[in-house]
Amino acid sequence: MNRDKDTLRRIARERRASAHGNVDPAPALERLKGLLSGTDGPVSFYWPIRTEIDPRPVMLALQASRTVCLPVTHGRDAALTFRRWHEGMDMEKDGFGVSIPALDEPVTPRVLVVPMLAFDSRCHRLGYGAGHYDRTLAALRPHARVVAIGLAYAAQHSDADLPVEATDQPLDAIVTEFGIVRPENGSSLAWQADDV
Image (cartoon, rainbow, N blue to C red; front, side, top):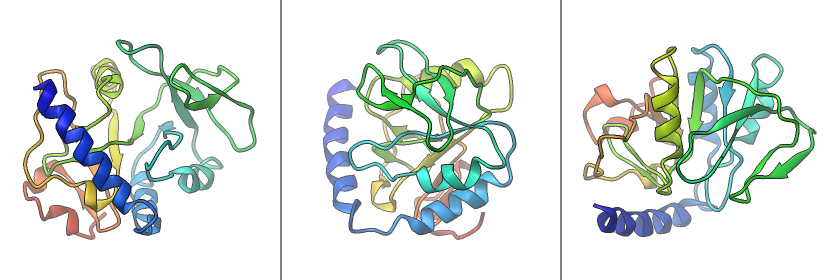
């Protein structure tokens, strides 16, 4: 399973890199804004690294009306915690070299916008392998309704179902420049739908 996932991650990195800089992410970001308008509570985003879609335009637009936060990692085998974020605040690097708010103002998100390497039509995602989001969602979901939304290029869609382990947490939706995938759609073509 790990060898299969390592191969899938390598292929997925290449596919995402080929889309990054060649595909306009603006339609995906607009769809994300629309989807978030139907939710409530604090929203966690991610600070983009490598060839991830940059969610900061949505963060900036949302900060006036919602609490926005960013994840903080605590080693490979730990769940994420979250710190409140606003434009212009001081940032520092976490143990993985990702930017996080320097001020430790804890927030418990009710919506998580999640990066990924690949996704399938069931809304399973392929991450970087540390399991941070799976552990976090497993910890948050028993206590409240928590919505997890993936943000990705359509090129990151896997025609075949991704391998799933017992600890993997599915997402509620995945937003791309072509549309929104929801697990109930049950079709690899569902992401082409424009519905919010």
